[in-house]
Length: 260
Image (tube, rainbow, N blue to C red; front, side, top):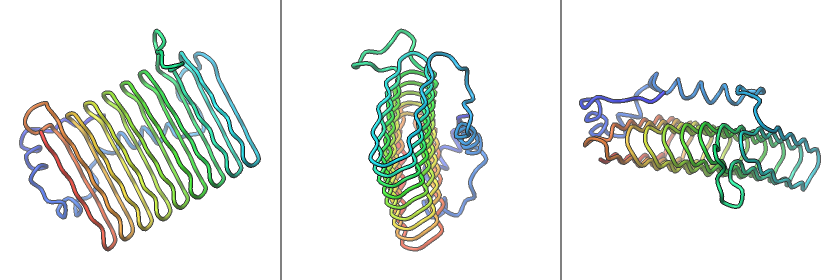
């Protein structure tokens, strides 16, 4: 799932200009992570039904719900209204981790306006899926552990996404369809993947990855977009990073920094 670059390839990645990268077609190395998160965004849970299963279906306005689970749990929430808020915390009860946290599954579907979703997962092999089909939605995902996956899809305007992942072998996927969207992704660890796809105007994306062996892919279709990618590593002089930005539109600003 992760790409390990050779010394020569890493040197090329460090010296290539942003404009040259923007003319390069998306590499096949991104297909694996994208297909993985896409399959996890399906209607069915692809893991084992171990532990408890929480399902909440709300049809109405101004609803609020909170789910706290520890162990190996499944949480599914669907809201068909406006002004809803939901919070999911898995494997973290009053800040104390359980014996074997992880392998949790959280899926949130919000089909209205002014919705807010917060997901906090602790442990290994956790999946977080957030689908928001309205305007001015807010999604926040925090994952602490290894081999965690975060999938956020927003089909409206003025949406804000914040994703923080701490650990190794974590994947973050964000897809926008609309205007004035913003995405902040902060990843700390080794061999991390970040994919961002945006179709609209006035989008802003910031990706910060710390460690080595990272992949970052950003594709934006629109005008007046700003993308910033920071990658840093400590394994070898290159850090074995890969960054690719594709932009179709005017007035875009691309900035990529890769360190050692």
